[in-house]
Length: 267
Ligand code: R5P
Image (cartoon, helix red, strand yellow):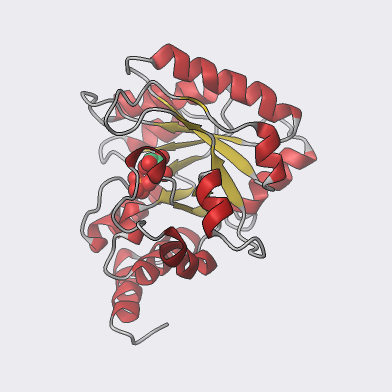
């Protein structure tokens, strides 16, 4: 691995737990193109109870400034890309938030989407390069998110292509989707840590199984949103995900944690 500067390494260590090398990032940035998403209509109320169980928050500056208590200790990864709403061509993103702003907000990292195979593929990948150029001047890690175009298959060939490109352009971490077949090949082909997004809400046990399988195939954690904040027990779910990622619990054990919290037997 490339020798990193102290600032870069120190910021990364705020989310990738140095003892386990893994992370539970809580993704709550969905409003940047979806507006008031189910489960995040009142961001402050939804996010605050989950903070004690997350290693970092993945969030936009607007929700950070308006809804998160500045006295919090939770490390912040800032979503810095956006532009099109869910009504338009999503790949047409620009950088929306400067590195200076990320520093002012005391972020430990910044993240943006790339759209491999999308209409504006070149622009998004070139923007990633520019963001890395600037972020590295300040020791700020960049998380690249491999957003999937409408007609793209989420298979290992596609995901592997997108993750590798993100790493080649200089991303320090990559967030992508999990695929059951050959996910370990995606990990093998990407020289920087991969975390998985949860995707659309699925049954709790299936989401825990996905987190478990991703970790066992080499992912360094999750950056999960809807499967946590849209659960009938968001606290139960984040505790269960954490048990898998940071404590190597089985899916059954983790599901037991979720059920206990949901049924009020365990706080
Ligand atoms: C898209 O809105 C963002 O990149 C999310 O942070 C990412 O998709 C993870 O959230 P979820 O687990 O809901 O897919």
